[in-house]
Amino acid sequence: MITTELVFVRHGEAQCNVDGLVGGPRTCTGLTNRGYDQVERAASRLAAEHQEQPFDALYCGPRLRLIQTGEIFSQALRLPLTMDERLDGPVHGDADGRPWPEVKTAADGGPHAHPDTPWALGSDTWNGYLARAAGFLSQLIDEHEGDRVLFAAHGETVIAAHTLLLGIPLGAPAGFTVTHGSLTCWQHHRNRLDQTRWILDRHNDTSHQLLAAEAAS
Image (cartoon, rainbow, N blue to C red; front, side, top):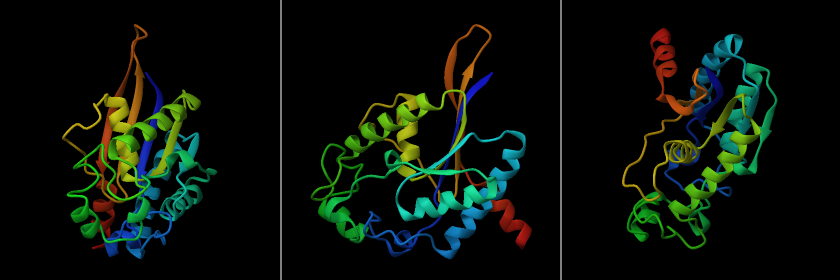
């Protein structure tokens, strides 16, 4: 039996992604037209699921690209959107707004390369972000025991969920691809012996994007 279900959708393509800029709070100007299209395709799929298995709550983080993504879901599912600061992405410090290649060159790699070292002045460390984000997700899971919850999320939030629920050690030399507009789903199962475990049902599922593109062609 499935008790709690968590569905994460990475936000659609944002202008900062296209420009190759570090998209902190100062720099995020929201979704591109392509990003809106990606989110609308995801919303259509989620709305169909919602008819059979209703969502109990919808969350987004505070950056504009997440709020815009969450608003589309809210309209499609007719579900109130809750903006929660606990779902914010990494703190980028002085890197906010700078080109990613410049930041990575100066830091000798991306955030994952040296996970206990800030990638810019005033930024998180990668392990520090994962620990904080996983702690916040654990709080939200406790608050929504037995619910089906939808998140308009950063890719880093999805990685934090995997770190938490798979028990991945901080600093592990492996990662996950999280595509714009993709769906990831975690389900908490309880069997007849009252034993429980988390199961990753879907990761980086973009089939709705492909099907919609084929239908339009």
